[in-house]
Amino acid sequence: MKRKWLQTLLGCSMVTLLMACNPPEGSHNHPSSVDPAAPSVQQAPDAHGAHQMSIHSEQDFIVQMIPHHTEAVVTSEWLLKHTQNPQLKAFAQEVIVVQKAEIQKMKDWHQAWYGAPFVDPGSYKPMMPMNAASPYEGEKSDQAYIKGMIGHHQGAVDMANQLKTMTQRPELLSFARTIIDTQSKEIEQLKQWVK
Image 1: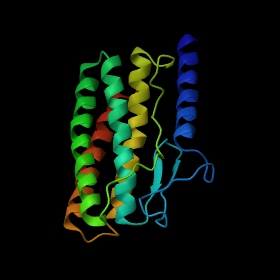
Image 2: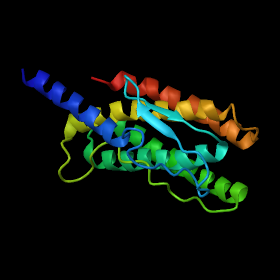
Image 3: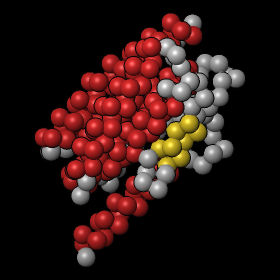
């Protein structure tokens, strides 16, 4: 009975988190670049919690992927302080190292290609509550992270697949392939840890 109650609570919490991270279209603006005329990304969770991402240009990809990566880094840093699972700690540490390097690479590209520094559009929120009032502790925080990161990674894979159809830049094509390969493998690993 207690286990079923906890599963129900976790399920409701994840739905609430996903809705908070992906408010209905039109509920607030998603500026997508320093160019106010540039199109914005559309995102909404699918039935499995994955962020359905839609980009409209290579610049849109960069402007949206930087905060998307930042969200993964911030959540992984929080998890490192709260998990006792050594495998999950190693996974989160790898996310932090790889995605911080990729964030810097994307910022450098934005400056070089578009003549302006990256400006955060402010469109992303944490995947899970990360404050003193967080309902997640121990195994609950581990599972919330795992399930949230599966959907989060799928959103990045979707964006990278779209990018391949709209850029000729070799750097971005290589970057898209790296995201698809790396994060698809990580999704499979995370699925093994779902309880």
